[in-house]
Length: 275
Image (cartoon, rainbow, N blue to C red; front, side, top):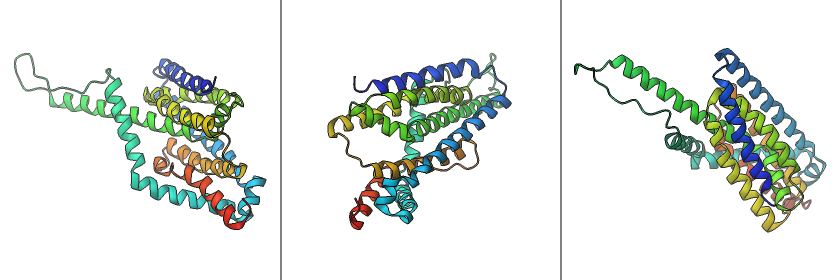
């Protein structure tokens, strides 16, 4: 059944996030922080491994050995400019905030209160409650955005959806489901229920790619896929840095680079006569 791989992936993320919430509150803050750092390191490793696509024979033959990195750089620049103009990162955060407001009934906004004798409310207590609510809201949004980026950017999301859509099986998405399930446990243990809601963009993104693949067939060359994989690797490196709180790189604004990379590869190959 076409689309089964994405369905399994969505379920794995939700189940993993639920498991993470069950154990997360039992872990001390120091352990939660360590788990998050480990996850960031793993994302860095995965991103680094994806950069091996820069030496893919088909990619090198299409854009020449010196052009592989330049195509990725060009895609990142074009993607960054486009994403910044469209404010993709801001819109992702706004969407996460909207979801938090819709589904997180456990985090009601603090309301003004008065004492039993009609006296003025304890402003310090109200301020503390408001600060706690804001912190939990920010945590929810961070979990949603970071998890969405990690689960959607990787090449398995794209290649697996293509494989599913063209009837070549769900092996890659099944593997991704296992990886995402374990990752969502670690994410949710520290970042809350926002991680579970990342299943929505994952389902939409992979579902769209699956439908496109089923409709258009295999339309991307090996060189285009390699450039997309390498560009995705750079974005995953940025996500890893972001997870570890080294620097808050606006990875969402770089997402158009995933579209620009294969298009640039085809363009360069056509100009050089190697496509």
